[in-house]
Length: 314
Image 1 (cartoon, one colour):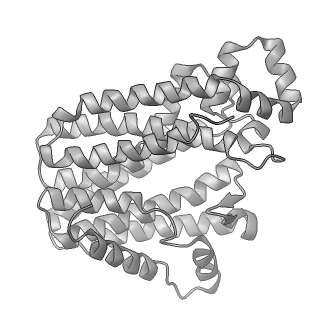
Image 2: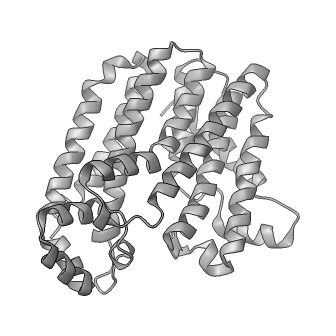
Image 3: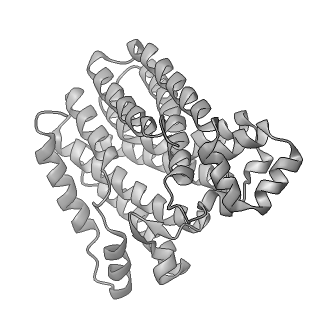
């Protein structure tokens, strides 16, 4: 963590809270329910630490951190609709509690607010750079989410899964750091290498998320990815390793499907794949500026920590 990051993070939280304050009664209710700074603020940490490491102004890094959190928050609202996810951060999701139109309006507002926020950055040329980057990233998020909609694990092989998972997850991991890279006017190869690394990080993160969806449910609950036959790393590997007859049986017996996944060694295969991804990133760190390497290493350590909880899962 950078020296003044705790202070900067408090500024991010205050500005996020302000962005969530609106006069319209319904929208205010939906925004307050969704919450502005209740997550882990990973993107804020990435933007703030990268900005300071590259010598950018504290103000620019804080505003950019807020922008990244607003876009991420909007993506969660829309993602919950697309995936029919009823729980977000421990409580009923906005679409489930207030309806799909409410969640769409709330997400749309946050996207608009993120673009408006960029105009608060002092340097005009930084505004132009970041507006272009944000616009491109929003398109990538939409492309990634649209590829996931109505995509069953039954239609995917591992390589197809990797492509879709990367497209869905990596843009919002790349965004906080790439914005600071571009404002610092780093050489083009650094942009290319950062994107490659964050693609790998995004894939590893999505695999961990898929493991959590299946393995961290209550004993009597059917995971949503099994219930709706969604794209999930565990399910894709099971499909590749099982006969059609076995898959048809498991589809019809979802509780048995869950227990099979919990007791099988397929999760260990996925842990090995995550470790390989993280090792590849570690071996590529020399392609990043020296001051950025600890930031990426820390992100990989966090993913490894999340993955390790499944190493001895029964």
